[in-house]
Amino acid sequence: MRKSSEKKNRSKAAKGVSAYDEALHFLTPKARTVRETENHLDECDYAEMEIFDVIERLKTNGLLNDEKYAADFIESRLNTKPVSRQKLREQLEGHFIKREVIEAALEAVTEETEKDNCRAIAEKFFRQFSSLELSERLRRVGLRLASRGYSFDDIKLCLEELTESMDEE
Image (cartoon, rainbow, N blue to C red; front, side):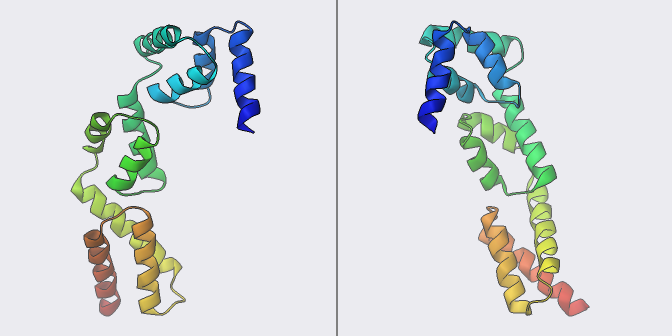
């Protein structure tokens, strides 16, 4: 499937579609990172200097900005399906963002926010698994938190809080 996609992309370059127009077309459906855009234009067989010029033009026009992309990505992700800072880091690395840009963006996620998100997720899944025995509920909640990248210490703390809240009821 990828071969036909690459042929289609290459035919655009061969047909005389400008690299800038192709980049704009690529950026239209959603925000992209600099590296994702470079890779796409490279797959379309544009020359290295042409790609460099287009990337610089897109940056100048405010259409490519990895710092803004990382900040928006983190905000969106935490508002829709919260995950740990570690998981956010991994996801941003998957978008080819430089480590220093990622670390700067992750400063917005405080330790308190991290623990609050972990607690909220734990409570959500604890309610979802209410038909199970306590030990199985806690095990499954722990697995869900681990899959979202939370540390063992944060998971342990959240599970202890859930157990204490059950004792109080």
